[in-house]
Length: 570
Image 1 (tube, helix red, strand yellow):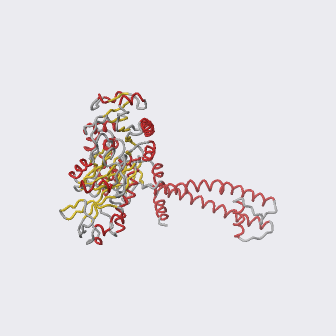
Image 2 (cartoon, rainbow, N blue to C red; image 1 turned 135 degrees about the vertical axis):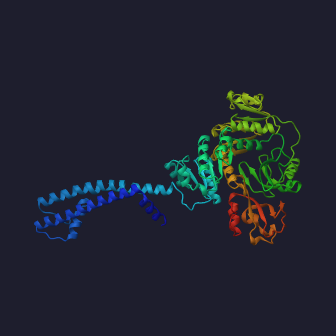
Image 3 (cartoon, rainbow, N blue to C red; image 1 turned 180 degrees about the vertical axis):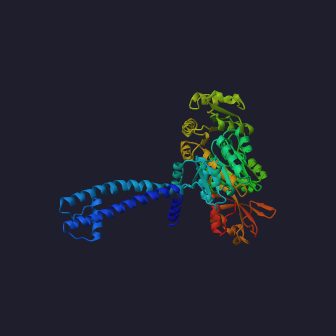
């Protein structure tokens, strides 16, 4: 019911709508006058025929004839009366069946629909709007970030310049606003001074314009800009961006981090409050075939297993969780404990053939650079010879089609421990994944997915590990938005800080049942200046403690709900 007064207020405040409404009222007055004249003439002609009727009967007869209902209960007996009836009927056809619908639709119904559209996709946010994240554009990365923000209960708005696109997104459940991102007035309407973050996610040129325009409006609001070209990073920073992210760099580094190339090692993915988070593929390591309990990783190294990736699915750890060739362990600890993990999980010594990278574009180049820095040998298969320019080591490039067996054999597909598929086209990546899996059933295949919908398809095609460009971008956005209080490791895993609820003070970790109740794990306890990493189950919680928790994005809300506290202020 609250929506109807808002619609009426918006309709009445529109100058065009008010003008149209006045035109509709003039038409209705003309129609009423015509009905009144016909009713009077009805009485005159009926009196001439010797018939007496009430004034209400005259109105009734006029409306039945004009609307072509013609009940026939009241009729004229003379030609003059019948002629009058024909005139009334024809005028009714014109005024009621033709002019009235057109007038109603043009002057009232269409403006009413436009008013509804403006309410669904407004051009201005209310003055009370605060702490919201403004996302520009509507590409898959932006929509994935919006979905994650919605899950976390964070206020946001997706800013687009096309009304039809905005309404489509609204129908899909997104909060949207309409406006030109390079117009200073738009940012005033978006209450940018009160926003918690602005994401510039268009092309590099428009992102520079957005950043510069927003910075002129507000010196304080944080701006995160996505850059496609390395040359644009400095320009975006000069324009006022607080942070510039190249998603191709992040994606390439993530693919290289998960590629097995001769040894299991913990690859750092982030840090929060002195805690280091890392991923370690278990492929060919001494851990394969054991359960987490049997491996004794925690006792031997001091690291905490946050969970495991199994062919695209993140699973919370349990003692009975088995480690497979495809398993990627997500670990948390200190630099020292992760170094001990590398020693414990060593792969038996042997010579490994070069890894094969399919695609020498921007992502493929990043993968090659990361592997080079790790001291691993590789071969890049690329069809376009022009991409050789600027390569770290052109001798490691094999020019030819990745779909050609002879080319793959020259790159060493028969002996390679891992193939990394990096092209920009998901259909091509699926094709190459199927091809490589048929050639080498024992091969580790790490693949890139540009859209989330193709992640499961790539897994079915035979990929051991898949990294999604869209999910990675959304995690980067949320990671910056929550940089002070949370670390977004992946789509299904984040680490966040939470003050200890008063109800848990004096209880041990075991008694608190945080793991079972809120589905998250306690990684560390901050107690003043002291930090207790990987606390024991019998550690007594004290008033004033701050917990460092790991779980799914929903776990933060679940924790607050279960223990009746407000979520951590971000």
